[in-house]
Image 1: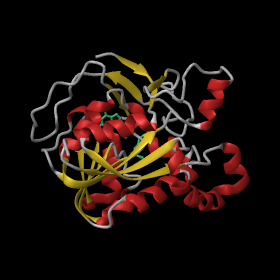
Image 2: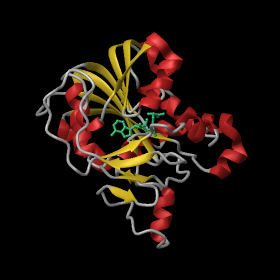
Image 3: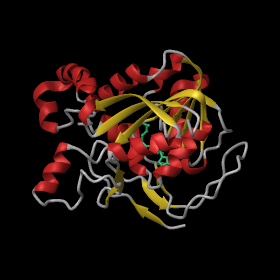
Length: 287
Ligand SMILES: C[S@@+](CC[C@H](N)C(=O)[O-])C[C@H]1O[C@@H](n2cnc3c(N)ncnc32)[C@H](O)[C@@H]1O
């Protein structure tokens, strides 16, 4: 197994400092092995073990605005009541207070022992934690009627496999809230137009930002993938529309939050923001 240090900068997505990214083959599921195809060699795990994501990225990074944006979206999109809910790549449970009261049983799934231990410390018996790799989820088919995955797609190269896994573990009719790191943003358009970047934000293929070691996805690419897998798109939100250090400084979190609340549904049709949120329903694959 090879390892290399992550060189992430402040991107609003990738951690500001150094989780280790390692190439891996399948990691054994923690419980109840489920028959799976073996993971492709190119699957990459961004290893947050030993990395203080909460303090370094959120607190020191002063990302109150981004946190508020995620909360506004999640509040709007998650069902009011659920039986079995899972937060995929849920980290230390940053958003757990948004779903715990809506679900009879909440699970946080993540690769990082450090993150899961933090989650357990904060929420105790109110959550179950489960460790494993997204490419081989350690859950039986049709385990959950509610699922969420936020701020994780930028780590995943094999997105069709990820979406297939999420679909597999959901109950028919279940609702998933999935956030994607969009490649089609205004700053990326300017960088492309002014020849500062070769990445064409309008083309649908996924992009890889080498210096940040992260993947970005075109909303239409993701939407095709969701539909092909059997997910029906119920609602879309454009999230973190004003993610700019200057705007944050001028307006502050409270005022930007008010503007954001209006912008999330209004700008959704043009998929404007760096974060696009989807509310999806699991339908039969060939429906
Ligand atoms: C940017 S954090 C987001 C955490 C949380 N969803 C949030 O919004 O605060 C990304 C998370 O993905 C997890 N992760 C990365 N690669 C993974 C993989 N292959 N399988 C499972 N979790 C993974 C990391 O451990 C980390 O907790």
